[in-house]
Image (cartoon, rainbow, N blue to C red):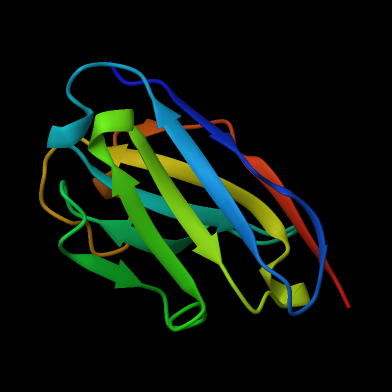
Length: 125
């Protein structure tokens, strides 16, 4: 069982940056691929970014490619999402998720077994 707790959300102006963190419990964090998803008001939850077990392989949604970076520190049981050049359309609740295997996910929510509660990111224009 893995418990995930996101932090770092908030209100920022367009063009600015935020870094989200997701702290995981358990001793098996380094064996899990991780992902970030988001859900905007009135929309379905969508894929944002993914990392394999050691961060050596990453994958991004086209909408965030070049602006967002996923990384992880297995010694700290934490995965990060660095978000630069934020846009109002990035406003959403952001969720981290753990996949019960080390290989990177390709963007489907069904690939992930554990989910955090989410953190709100609001980008004002």
